[in-house]
Image 1 (cartoon, rainbow, N blue to C red):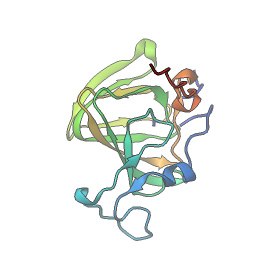
Image 2: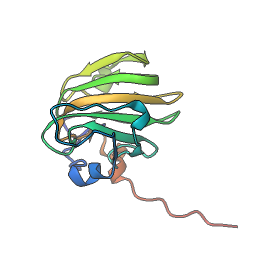
Image 3: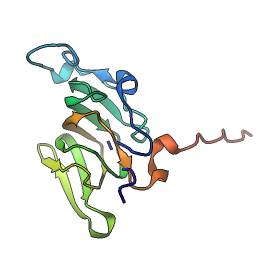
Image 4: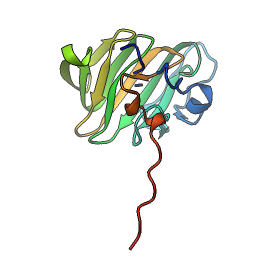
Length: 171
């Protein structure tokens, strides 16, 4: 059960500094300061780390998810996106910025689910199993404490463990 699970892993130690360095950052993110201000219009999106399924984009608003300490990130997911059941070693506060968001929380046999829309909030305690999905696309803000790790309950669900598919034959 404690074998791995969005957004951290024991199995495949998740993205730390170098992986998150590839993610785009907001205009004030990562700069030493007593405060951070990021205008939504200034956010630059980049690919999410390989610990998340392909298709998601991410930006770092403050802090460094690859290092110890608080951070704030935003994740943009396309319609039909799903993150299989997983857990994180630290509490995770999620605010839905736009779109629709579905969470199934708890171990799969006793999970409970909820649908969220813009403005809604969820706090997921450390190591709480959950899975997330969106029907029409979503932007969520995640506040937590790094280093960010994701451990998938089923290691086969971990995108880092999936082999690239061979190119299909052409006509």
